[in-house]
Structure formats: structure tokens, C-alpha cells
Length: 261
Image (cartoon, rainbow, N blue to C red; front, side, top):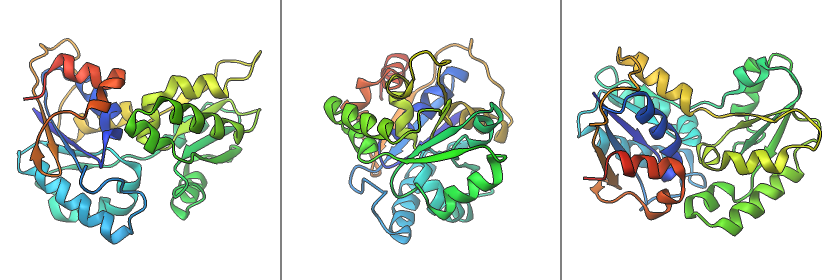
């Protein structure tokens, strides 16, 4: 079994680690775009062109499925990616976990990039899946970029700024950018109110990993031998896992379980 994941940077680490935990025997191909990152400020057409190039680099390794490990790329490029690659290569997108978060009850906040916050895309997700729950949309200025650089001071500042915009009565936070899952516990600590029940965090990585296996007819086998390989593509060129990735537990898990070849 071979599964590819794509993103402009290391936001795909959370989903990659989730796949690794479910299938330690799966070969993984990570296709990043350091030459073109960040994708967020790009026009939809430009972003789609970059995403197609990164996807085709991954597809050349003949994976069984391709995961778009980026919310922004899913919004703008998923249709084009599926038109180009399916049905031969199943393409799985990443969508914020609004529906399960709303099912837990209580006011919730969606932390997302400024470009996504308030967008028609996110508003449609809220209207479709929030089930009438009270939802606060919180723009997280600079957080994805700080996580990408593993800049500790900038991460702390961005998390604190977003926490200050989050209503005090929020009981649940949806992590609307895959980068944010890498600093989930920092977000929890910043938003958690004294004397209130533990804050619930909802990311997409686990659901994306499970959906990927379903799409290719696979089953979780967490006790399988840890024989899976890891291949990293950097704007189409084979290379090392970015140094910043090793700052996070998910990156260390991948490197420890399967050194980059």
C-alpha cells in the first residue's frame, strides 16, 4: 500500500502521522512545494497550477491514493485535481471538522487563516454542518506561517492573539487549518478558561486518514510491522524532510518510524 500526501509545506504532517499510526506498513510519499509556498496569498488559478504540479510529482510514484493535506488547496484546487487524476488515482480533500464539533453541543469557534475566515466557503460549511450551533469565526494572523517556520515566539504570539478573539464561553475549537493541529495543545492551553470543562479540539487528520483507507479498500492495521518507507518530494525533487518538521511530534514520529530515503 502506498499513500501520497500533498501540501505547500508541513501542514500535511498531522494527516501523515495519522496514516502512519493506522498503517505502519504503508509506504508514504510527501509532496511539498517549497519553491511556491505559501499558497494562501496566491490567486485561485495560480494556487491550482502549483497544486497540480505537486500532485503530478506525487502521482509519478504510483500511489494508491492522494491526500490534499491543506484546507486552502482543497477549497481552490480539489475539483481540478480530481478532474486530472481520478478515477485512476483517488483524491481525498481536507475539510474542517465542523459537523462533529457541532454535534458535541455548546458554542464553538473555528480558527482559520484570515483568507478563509468569513469566506463563502467557510460560511457554507457552517450553514450546512453546524446545525444551528453558535459559531465564532476567528482569524489566526500569521499562525500557519509561524508553525511552518517552527518559530516558537511567533507561534506563541499568534496563538495568544487568536485566543483573545475567541469568546469566553466557547467550549469547542475547530482547527480550520492543518498547520494548527501541530500546536493543538498550545491552542487548548490558551483558550481554556479556569474552572470550565476541558476545551474540546477538533482537527481533520484522523478522519482524513480513515477516509483514505476506505477509498482504497484498506483497513486499519495499527499493529502491522513498521516497514513503510517515506519519500519526500520538494517541488518535484526528492529530498529530506524539512528541518522544521522535526520540531513537532508528528514529524519526529515519521522520521523515527521510517527515515527518509
